[in-house]
Image (cartoon, rainbow, N blue to C red; front, side):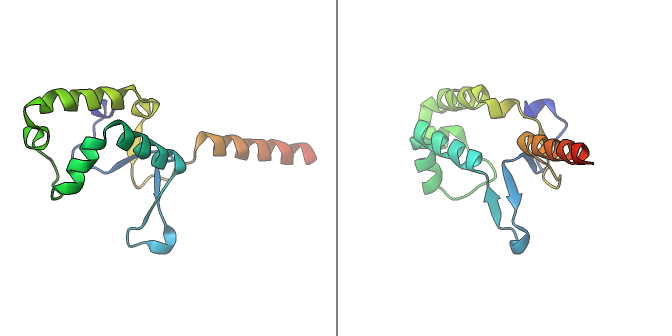
Length: 121
């Protein structure tokens, strides 16, 4: 879990394969993987009221649970957190956003290409 790591609240972290900065748009244009997009879509379908509320309020670094959800806010956030914690992505390590990473599938393809080239030699 992210809380098990030594990151502080000001660190920017990512899960390998979730996002990358587009080199052509170095001013901050982000490209999200299909997996990340699918996860956000699933999240918005599972908790549409959360997305509706966040769409209506002004951006803040943090929000007051009660002001967003009313008296049942703590229970609602606990439900959302439990769902997020149940996802496979929750168990993946976070990396500094400046890290260069490869997905496992890509590493396997590279290893296969190296093996093929060695066999040809």
